[in-house]
Amino acid sequence: MSIKKNVPVITIDGPTASGKGTIARKLSDVLGWSILDSGAIYRSLAFYIILRKVSLVDINSIVDIAREIEFSFINKKIFIDGVDVSHDIRSEEVGHTASIISANKDVRHALLDIQRSFLEPPGLIADGRDMGAVVFPFASLKIFLTANIDIRVERRYKQLIDDKVSVNMGNLRCAILERDLRDSERLVSPLIPDSDAYILDNSYITDNETVNVILNLWKNRLC
Image (cartoon, rainbow, N blue to C red):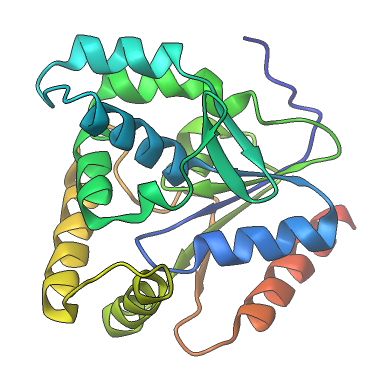
């Protein structure tokens, strides 16, 4: 597919519970741009293959499914083939499965055009793990958002509790550390800041302060 490189895009990459989704949504509201939650796409695919009882080693079937199902974001919710799966994809089982399948180059390639199809005027906020390095390497502004592990565990725990998902904080910490290691060491699109990304640690600043930092960076790019 042809890529609309004339449409501005801000990428926000980072590890689990770094605040990517929250910040992306706030930026989308301020700028009036579309939003791409790439993690939700991988989670949706993971949920679908769990539902279909597809083996994680059956990569051909997973790739076929990735190419067949239709993903859409409507009013901050994600739909697969018209069905709202926003709540279903937030479990730790789905997250773990998503982390495994996302390490496969064929799966990532199958989802590449789908993610790029979200790039439409007036602009896009793309949230994920390789948005700046792989999906939108031509992005107008690349942010790598991070926070210390204790802060991230607390954030993820609160999110799961708010979503009425039962979770043990100790197990959650281990799961996040395991995900960090798997993401940073995978051979395909490892989780590392792109060479021209701005690294922003938001451990001790508010969401609004984080948004303001990014907006100021964006305004400076326009000058």
